[in-house]
Image 1: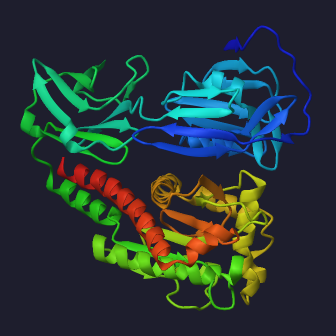
Image 2 (image 1 turned 90 degrees about the vertical axis):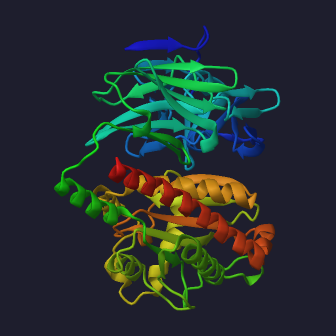
Image 3 (image 1 turned 135 degrees about the horizontal axis):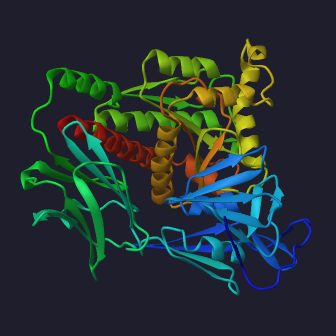
Length: 501
């Protein structure tokens, strides 16, 4: 195991209380410039930020072990492991030592941003820089937009998945064959020829050669046998370019029958919308007496119309009027009607009236005290239920952990959350608080991809005013619709593509 050190002199400072400081300004540069911020604290003049929120900005998945107080950040093919109150950071099998240990509080693990960025800078898919004097982090999200390629062997050919950081217009993509090579040209593509990966065993493609030109990127694949251009199809979705290479024209009838059954099973044709609270449960009562139950019901109704009219799917709601529905009734309703997606819609609240923004949750153990409190607030609906005692002690997470272990839709739920969060943050022009996880009881037991969307803080005077507006609620519905649409198209393109190959 290799060990690397930052600098020449190390003084491991004892853990001290984090002093609140000015937030770190974040500038995200791409096709357009967006701004955000990171909470910051100071320890003896060194700026610390919560590493989980930094990972959210990098759109990097994370996994947290509450027992070991260890967070794993997934950066492309690399795994970065950070431990509370520890100065060592692992990247794959390499060990780096920070000049001082990480800190820990109810918000999670905090890292010294200056030194931590030195460790991960060589592993992030997009370049980043930090201006210490201005306390400003700059992310260049479009400088590199092609991460790697995975080849999947199918019954009748090979499917190439080219991982991208943005959706490419099909008119900017081209594929051709010449002298035993398959070339995929991506206009506007940017890649790092030294770090792009190629994985997946198959018998058709021997190797990949990546080339970066001034205005385009090219991926060249050495073919093990001759193929025809007409046997290749090319398409693009939100974060992938798909290249299907057919090597066989006929499939056994029994395989076609099985594929057709599988296709019907995975098509997203029924969506369950769950407006939170209702009836005797008003949910959070926000600024100016605004009730959560009324806002989320209106947004859900608007979203239902969009989904039915534009996607032609069946949409059912756990409640369509101001009536009370128990948490278990909601998940039972979704399962009974064989929903393919479950979207629970809520509005947020915080004692700090300046808190604002949108966030999307998956089922999981809360990483921060704030996330735990939000879940606890939403779960408090059980006090209105006649059989509330059956839920047991909600402070005990054993039930939720058991449900997670039995849930086969964790990955899909995280992907759905990513599509929705990206869409609402982009279209509402408000702060993106990221994709998070917490123990929401309403998400327990639903056998499908499921997320909970917090559409804004009704405790914030400015955001409450926006939520009162019908036009803004329509905008929220449009944004959630777009996220669902993109997830549906990506999921079904893969299924339908597999059937055609």
